Image (cartoon, rainbow, N blue to C red):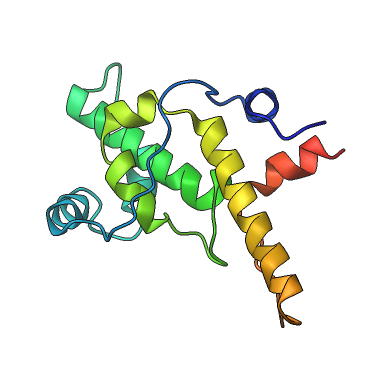
Length: 148
């Protein structure tokens, strides 16, 4: 099966249409860092926001905070982790900090872009030496299911 947005949608059940996730080429602006720090001050705050009992209805503010926390958590642990340990890629914080961006994002395209980027890095590392270890970031669940 080919690595396509349609296959990502089928395997992971995520959006395969909408706006492209913009990966910043610059550092996270100080104003956004402050906003994120205030919203998610403690390291486990993402989990706390996701596990909180909201009752019958969430306020718009709580819903937006939940959307940002969920997208950050998914990017750190499932959709496109690029590091050896789970962390939200700094280059996507500016995009995902806006709940409207998250709701309209083509997540399938993002998953594929991370897989392609990391595959190219592995290829380059293998061609230019004998690396001690290989770091393969991306959505392993998708890759495992798609190749069965």
